[in-house]
Image (cartoon, one colour):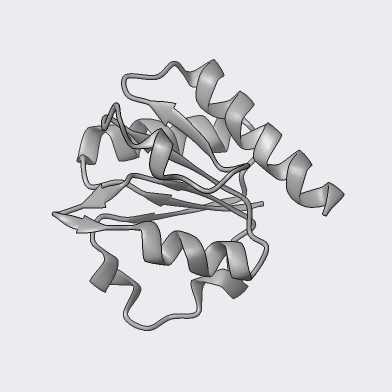
Length: 117
């Protein structure tokens, strides 16, 4: 399992990486800015993603659409309290601060939904 974590807060990213590894992720890629992707076709490398809504002032919603097109499950993990109303149906939003159990459960639900499609 390869997890993509898009998070610009260093400590949060490290905590999420550890959490993912504790729950079976073999590989975790952390991206703190969208330009770190460097044109890579990350959708061919990852199985699931955790996206912060804003990375260094740049929205991740276009990237989320790319994940959707490639049928890669993901969740948004964000501190934006009013963001959920702007998200496509079926995409889960986990509000910061979140517990480890909340995040893992949301990822499991996202993966389960993608397996049914």
